[in-house]
Length: 337
Ligand code: AHG
Ligand code: MN
Ligand code: MN
Image (cartoon, rainbow, N blue to C red; front, side):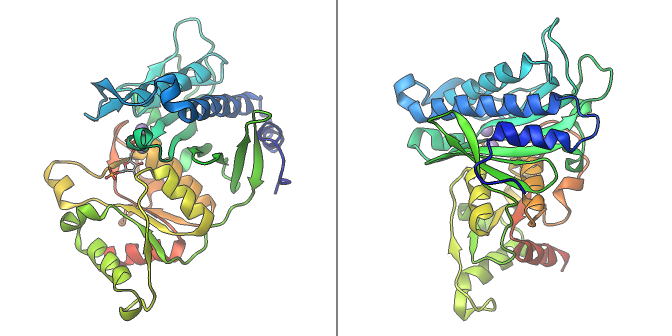
């Protein structure tokens, strides 16, 4: 446990001391990620004043029209991470293939995968957006890692987290020893520890799912949501509340703050179009699953633990059910029937 008020800089230096033989690169890398997030916090706050709203005239590899901020935030991340010798390569939602460092740049020991701007459709309506990141060790002695080198199960992540650009900017980090929450103090430009060893309540009365897809859902999800909506009069015997922010970062943050369950399940419409889910395994589901599990919650596809999945592609999608332990377990149980 760290003292509330500890700066992120102090925190990551202390964390480094807990690893024997640590070289300082991990510390440097987390600092670089924090720098990128601070820049994005500034840009998202300025919004229209600096011309970052609206669509760009391009599509990403998933066929989604990119927002200007999708491209800008991807560039901000690359710039912050490629110059300090801590990373070997990068991969992101906004880049079709692995980003290898330019010749002559110092290579480091980590691979970073990120969703530079999550919930980007919220940008133009001034609702919360975020950044998600995942860190694994790079293979030794490889100058230009390939996509295969990134295809590791989530259990191999050495750090993961997100930064939420909401009413305040909040960075949430796990290095596998619990979850810590930092709030950006703009007066000194530092992330300050405001909650440590965050734990998610095991029970909840709040669910998050895009109900416009209801007619396509599979039986276990239909049953679970019907029972929630039936409230006090139904088998659950209690009323539920519903939220949908359309930014996974904001949903996960709400769950860390007061419990809840978030679902983006596989449905028949996806199946018919050959999709395996909506959210991406390597830069959305895996890092968020690590955060959720480290906070005592569960993260599953409904059928298997997300963190144990062996990825086969950089932009692979997965069904996601995560949050308060007892609720997620119930959804898993419904899939077993
Ligand atoms: P992104 O903006 O990075 O593409 O991610 C958006 C994701 C996720 O954050 C959110 O939960 C979900 O897509 C929203 O989906 P709907 O458009 O179906 O609401
Ligand atoms: Mn996203
Ligand atoms: Mn995104």
